Amino acid sequence: MPIRKLSQDVINKIAAGEVVQRPANAIKELIENSIDAGAKSIKIKTKKGGLEMFSIEDDGCGIAMEDLPLAGVRFATSKLQEYTDLKDIGSFGFRGEALASISHVGHLTITSKPASQQVAYKLSFDEGQANGEAIPSAGKNGTLIQVKDLFHNMNMRQKSYNPNEEQYKKSQKYFCDPEFTTNIIYEL
Image 1: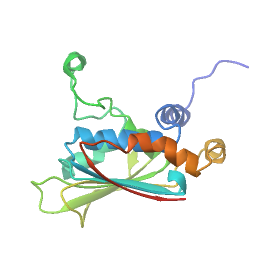
Image 2 (image 1 turned 180 degrees about the vertical axis):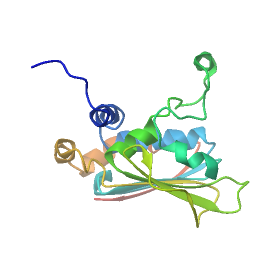
Image 3 (image 1 turned 60 degrees about the vertical axis):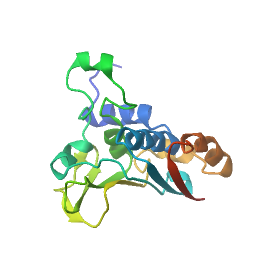
Image 4 (image 1 turned 90 degrees about the horizontal axis):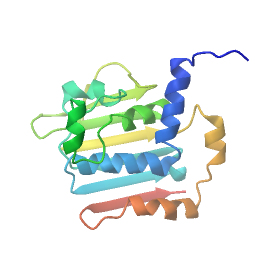
C-alpha cells in the first residue's frame, strides 16, 4: 500500500481520541478548565456513563462572548501566547485541545457569562467548528459545558465503552477535591 497523507478529518479524530479516550477523560479535562478559571463550585451531570450526555457547570471567570468562537478551536488558548510562556505556566491546561477534541467526537455546547457581561452567550461546536454565532442565553456567572452523543462518529469506541457502576467509581477520583464544592448527578 502506498504512503498517503491523512485527511484533516482523520487527523482530527485521531488527535481527539488521544485526549478523549472515554467520558471520564473528557470530564477531567473540563474540570481542570473550571479550576483554571477560578471556579469554587463545579456541578457535574452524566447520563449513560457520559456517552449520552455530560455537563460541567462552574462559577469560574467565564468566557467573553467575543472569545466563544475560538473556545472550541484546536490550539486556541487564553493561557499562553509564546513558547517561552511554558516555563511559567501555572495552569492544568494550556494547549487549547480539550474543547476542540471533544467537539470532534461529540456535540459540544458552551454557555458562558463573565461577571462583566450583562447576559450569558451560547455557542455550539461540531468537528472543531462553531455552528453559527454566539447567541444570548439564560445563564449565571461562569461556564456550562454540555456534551451530547459522545463518540457518535466513532462506533468502535462507543461499542467498547460499558457505562457501569465500576466505570463510575473509577472516574470519581476526578470529581472529588476538598477545595471545591462538587455536585455530581450520575444516571446509568
